[in-house]
Length: 211
Image (cartoon, rainbow, N blue to C red):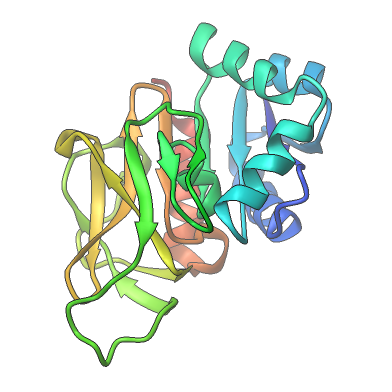
């Protein structure tokens, strides 16, 4: 199968693709970095990475000629699995409020707002390792248990409208959404490509996932 990593100028592209290639060595899937709408529409799986501000990433995505329409065709019409990473996850939301209010893809209902820990000694962004707490069973976390470590770098977080679409959270001066999911759509606030064995396990699970 073909896994399309969408290239829209949003950061951690090569490191995410490299980790996917490593995971795909066991599944035999082909990983391609692409900005081509036809490749995206025909892909068996899609990965939407992202680093930076919500609005900047959304503009980059919309600037792809036919890119968003191709994603809708693949994900919403054909039911192909998609994985959003970091800001790529946040773009799945209804709206982001970083530097103004900006519409997201609205594929998982919710808002992306500034991270405000209850503990004033905790720094923003959350940067470093944290323990995942799984809220809903999901194939992407197969073989992992709550307490698995993942690597985070973010200043904004996803507040989902529906609690059953929060797959995992972490404690950072309060509950912070770490993963969301609905049907063939899943998003990770953390960086699996920086999360060592746990991250590779999750990426491998994504490649094997049959929603």
